[in-house]
Image 1 (cartoon, rainbow, N blue to C red):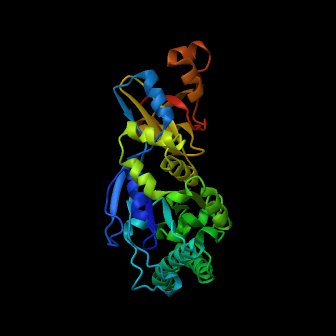
Image 2: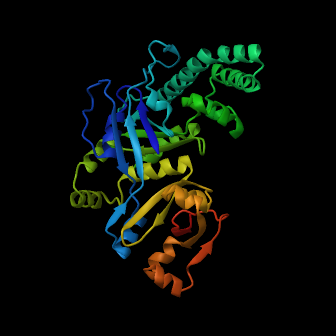
Length: 352
């Protein structure tokens, strides 16, 4: 899973990157530097399974975060020459948008709208560079695919010109497949991080309510965190971090909530494989059937899939082992149509 962290100048996006990745990249220097990190997804369930199984290795799911300087803060006043969007950003699964909420004069609604305008502009530029080529190809060759693509691009352009991002333009799944190659930014899910001040700790709800009108389930999700404090927490060792959180009366860092929100926004869940060599979390889309999930472990397992032997996470923790779950009747065998659930502990049987 790849998430691009973006925001307008001085929004604190590199601070959020440092908090998420446990890094110490320079902040406030207003440089055009980009940063990248692959981080382990915190999952207390995996840690509990490892305590029970005592494997030689524990492997968490991972997220690829990259912090990129790309947006001008000019909104509609930007143009093709000033808006330079790195290619990597187009291939992110989702965008994490950092909005400044930590000064008395901040204007989060305005800044959010400027950001949306620049996403729209980026997509307009791409369409305008391609639409005539597709229309010309369709006219000269009679290529039906080119003709369909041109009609869809024209529909997208109309929405963008009306100020509507493609995520809200009513584009069907079948149409999304046609324009997937363009990797439009305004079509991507947005996780909007309201970067609040330390004075507002525990009062994030007031910011969420303020921006609530811009939230759209499954398309735009909002979370309020104090990036400065989270960056300081990430720099501490585990014991000091736990003590600091305890003093604040907080059970988990807000960055864990942010990661959970990322999963929810993208429709992702985790299942687990456990054994003597390794306990591991695997990331799949909600609604994935057992053979496809097996393919995440290894393509040969999907190809030769026979069955999935499944234990729920709660049952595994209650009984403590695969053998004990079998004895308690909490072990079930599923076939090719089984839809894997979040937290399933699975052993795949296969033959090739």
